Amino acid sequence: MEKKKMLIDINEKPSIGKWIVLAIQHVFAMFGATILVPILVNQAAGEEVLTIPVALVASGIGTLIYILCTKGRSPVYLGSSFAFISPIAAAFLVGGIGGAMTGIMAVGLIYIVVALIIKLIGKDWLDKLLPPIIIGPMIMVIGFSLAPSAISSIGIDGTTSIAWKGVIVALVSFLVTAFVMTRAKGFLKIIPFLVGIVSGYIVAICFGLVDFTTFKDAALFSMPAFKIPFVHYKLNFAALITIAPIALVTMCEHIGDHTALGNIIGKDLIKDPGLDRTLLGDGLATFVAGLIGGPANTTYGENTSVVGMTKVASVWVIGLAAIFAIIIGFLGKFTALVSSIPNPVLGGVSLLLYGFIGINGLKVLMTNKVDFENPKNVLIASTMLVLGLGGAVISITSGDLNIPIKGMSLAAVFGIILNLIIPDSKEELVEDIEVEDKIIATPKAKKTTTTKKVAEAKKETAKKAKENKKEDKTEKSPKKTTSKKTTKKKTK
Image (cartoon, rainbow, N blue to C red; front, side, top):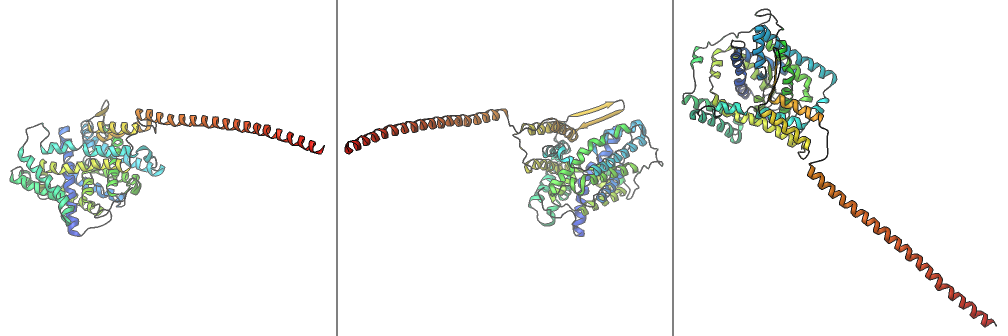
């Protein structure tokens, strides 16, 4: 893999001031999605299943666990997983809080088991299972499938009348982020998202789009509502089948995110620190999240984008961001303040974040020189992109079991199957094959004609040679006769 230089590499530690600011930038990047998962789960269940402070603490603890498992070799941030929103709500309706948390812990254990299997049998099979023609579209789907979220946050998705104040706020956030990223120098150049969010937030306050009511009512310090097994609930395996199978789907997301990040930083994370270690870290993080009453964790594309666009891959920065997330979970005022950031601010910044992920998928295809004259590659990539970006969903339903497969997971499943069942072919399109046949046939005909001419020429030469020999013999024989007669006469 091509080596790409980071401004601050994986094991490098920035100065204290820069360290803090860079970590806060990562907190802002993950905050919106992480707190949205508890909100959506509670809406789907009709009751409070998850809380925002616990989700933040689980996110921070999970990231630190991941860093320890990967020995600080992978700058990944873990946040609340959107793939488990419906399954957690369904598990809660079947088995209460015990059913939901038992299911989440089971998912973590499945990750751990798979990590141990990979440790034992190796991971060379992954190169055959996930070639660049699958990895590239997977990464593209990860980024571009989030595009509707950014557009919806800005308020220009066509579902409601356009709020011009929100559009201006989003535009300010976007332009400031883009300007800082491309024109700024020094330290400002590596915190474009933080500068963009703060600028958009200030404009939003001027437009009266920020509601400070929650901030005023929140306590300065508050204990998150942790839910511990055998203290707040008993283990309930009734809904296990509702959540556990989703682990197999999100593993594709795990591999895709690590491949995307590896392509950005110029390091193959699947081999070093290794898929066994990354899955182990993700699995333990999810298990601990369920143990304290939080949502399942997953690798965050938003933070991957921050690493790529700022060229700061320091695990020290990721680790400090995780510590900040834990602290924020106990700070009611700060949580409320960050939660007051309007959607247009985050939407404007997300235009760059999500697009950057998708473009890296395209770079994978270009770097590996994937041949799109090959019909097999065209078929795989087009199918994956249409399924992943088209909103296709396949739900496996049996009784209480409901496993929705969509987005990148669905695209990956189809891509892997197509790659395995379609035979490799060096032939190109049908028209090209016909042209090649004509081209190949012409030289053969020429060769045949030439050979015949040579053979005929040889025959003619041989005939002439024979005739010449005969003529020589006939010419020589009379001369000999004459000379004999002459000598006889002289003798007489």
